[in-house]
Amino acid sequence: MKIAIFSTKSYDRTFLEAANSAHGHDLVFYEPRLTPETVTLAEGFPAICIFVNDHLNSAMLQTLAQNGTRLIALRSAGFNHVDLQTAQHLNITVVRVPAYSPYAVAEHTVALLLALNRKIHRAYARVREGNFALDGLLGFDIHGQTVGIVGTGKIGVEVARILHGFGCKLLAYDITPNEACEKMDVRYMSCSKLFEVSNPLPRSSSAWRYKHISSGLEQIEPSAELDSNQVAWARAPPGGRGRSSWYGE
Image (cartoon, rainbow, N blue to C red; front, side, top):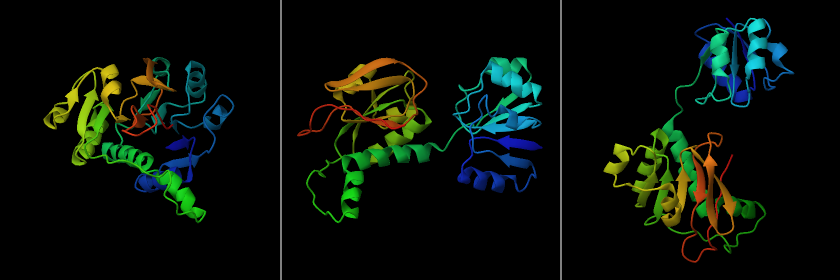
């Protein structure tokens, strides 16, 4: 089968070609995103493969269907960038990644937390310049901290397991409590209360959007647009400079 693959990087080509070695599909890689300007590149391909920044609305899907596309494979677990109702109406099959490794994402979440706490990024930049001063690089022990986790699904529960190993007191918010978390003595509470009492707060859910304000964190609105596992600092530790937040994209 001929498959047009959009938004590709070098690592996409490496892994997809390796996976295709036993199947023999005709893979054509395109670096540009799939947009109204580039949709003609998909003409004649019965299948296409897209990533999260390739937005397929009704008009795009109609063009794809007219050009012969019958299958859309998503290189993502999320599918909110595709108009599924229109795809169904056009008899276009849409498939997705069922899940990413929850361990990889959870471990990266804790890595970000530690990097921020121990000022790893700032220390690295200093050392590159030959500056070995320790001023401003002081962190604090994660052990004994009260850590709040927003979202305790497959990823959140792994974050909880790692931080439980650090000796943290764990709090959590989720619509449905996770039994595995409760066995680790994770205490569930409201989202607003979680921000009030937590120190470092890994966010393993894209259910809420927050913004940074000088006095704390203000809950804004439900959202499914933010990436998961972004770390927010709900409260600075003793001796810190007050409440602040950080999240990556």
